[in-house]
Image (tube, rainbow, N blue to C red; front, side):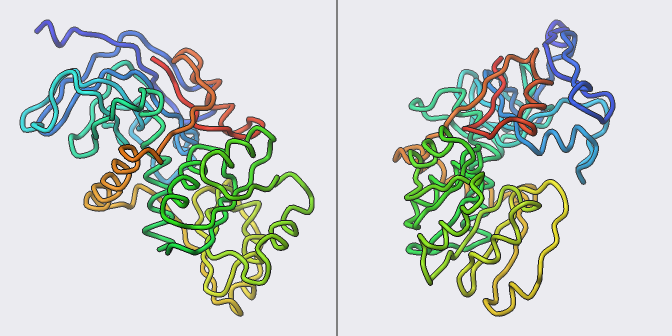
Length: 329
C-alpha cells in the first residue's frame, strides 16, 4: 500500500482557457505502470505550441478534465510494468508521448513510445527530441518525400521544429534555406544545417530569396506560420513544389491559381496521425542521427515547473523562438 501513497508535483488543468488555468499541485498520486507501460522520473519536459492550443480548448484534441499537459519528457526509468521488458529501472530515456502528462515529476508512457537516450545527449536535449524531430521528419520524409539534391526552405527555422528540420534536411542531402526574425535566430539557423538564412521581418525578404534561388525556385517549404506566409510560399515554389503546413494560427486568403501553373501542392501535417510503425521508422532514423552526431537539439528558454504559465505565454507571444523551450524538474 505504501507505493500508492507516493505523491508528486504536477501541473493540472481543470478548465480550458488562458495560461492562468495551469495549476501546479503537490498532492498528485504518482501513477503505477501497468502492462507494457513504464514510469519515468522526469528531469526535463519540452513545451510545444500545440499544448497551448489544447489548453485553450481550441484544438481538435480535447482531453478529459482535469488533465496534465506535456508529451516530450526525458528522464530515468523509475518502474516498469509487466511485459515492458525493453527497459529496466535506471535507464536514461526520452518519449514523444506520455499517458499521464509530462508537466510532472513522474510520467507514465507506453513502452513503444519510449526510446533510449544516448549518453552524449543530456536530459534537456532529450526533452527537445519528441514532437519537434518526429514532426520535422514526418514533414520532410513522409509528407514532402524529399530527395537528395532538392531545395527546402524552412519558414520559421529558429524554433524547435524548424531547427530539427534544418538538421534533418542537411543530413539527407538537401539545399537548406531558413528564415528567422532575430539576429540570434539567424545565427543559430546557420549553425544547424542551413546554407543560407533570411530575415522574415525585412519587407523585401521574399525578393531576396527569389534572387538567391534564381529561376529554379524552391522544391519544398516547411511552413510554421501558414496564416501569414502561405500566399508568399506559393510564389516561391518550383514546378511540382510542395508547401508542408506544420504550424498555423488563423485564416489566410490565397489565390488557388498560384498552384495551377506549377502543379504545386499544399499538404498539412500532424504528428498524431502517424501509425505505430511510422513512429518506429522515424525513431530508427533519428537514433542514427544521435549516434552519428547530426541530431543535436538546441535548447532555448528554460523554466521551472512553477513558471509554466509564463512559458505558455512566451511560446506564443515571445519575440521569436530560438531553440526548444523546456521545463526543468
